[in-house]
Length: 488
Image (cartoon, rainbow, N blue to C red):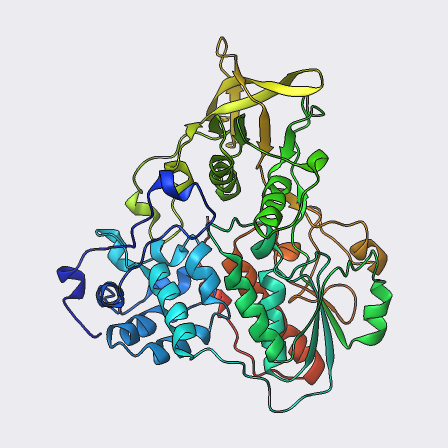
């Protein structure tokens, strides 16, 4: 513990964001510069607890007090070595992780927690700037070939791990660019794409091969992978969106959130979008249905389009402003206000969408009703009832469905391979192994819709399972899953 009184001397401080009315004019990163000396002070707040719950709050098991101590000592190279030993992509998680480690921080019981996510991002960026991050191709090759389907965070993490131990790794991506959710699901103002491209270029220099426009189950025969590779790892994600099958769903102007976000990311990347396919919020009353991170991303993107108004509605009750101390160290249910909300958005809770209304085939409004949540005395489960007399209709020219995902896509690759799925539609596995001898699975395709940090953790664990299958043993790091706490 470098400064035993650090948590008493300094309070939590984070980089300032750019002015909301200025930043909605572009898709650049939101945050202003934050001097290294300030980050050092934030690292000094870490108490190096006897039982560091932050380790267990993090799905990756990041060794947080140790890298905080290295930052305090301004030994950035050591800090990066410690951080990268458990996390392949700290430049991603340092930007887009909701930081369950911080909700588990012991200091957070009665003070603002240590700014772990910011410190993590700072370590990664200093490491790139100072040249500590370099290609490290393996010195020996095993001769074993592994195909990874999907280049999202799970697929990339697995590729990095398997390549490190000498296997020949090829990543198949059905899109035209590498990155999966990182590339097309997260807006540039949260994750500028040079960050992804920088890492992919590094992985290519280490010997990993990437094949884009390669839709396994479509223009790539899954049997080709089974014949040509010693192991196949499926990391295709949970891509079937939850629909809202109500009156008016067919109206023009009602879209899935991911269609809206992906198209915008393509536009920011310089792709030409045909007019007939364009989904724009410009000069429209936008309603985002769903209160999670994807909904928030739709809010920020709509503001940058120049929406006339943006409303975000949520089925659940409004969360409390403050955390219940009894939830520590687990993930708390609390009201979260994102940077996108700060840019302009009306938020409403406990609303059920009854119907989309429209004229001339285009959506013009939403019919809503207030609901009340209560626990059933018979079943003990929570449910809702409509509140009589609270029906209303609000204007809506663009409705975005951000209500989650159901399962991976079964038609195509999974169906042709004969991979078994469970009752939810996720791939069934045992220690990341499917019912097929050399086919493995990781990420949202296995566990269901989740966080980027969980996807990276899944990719790492699956890589170890693949390595054990190929070699009979594995020297890859293993996460102690016995101490993982609830993610909420």
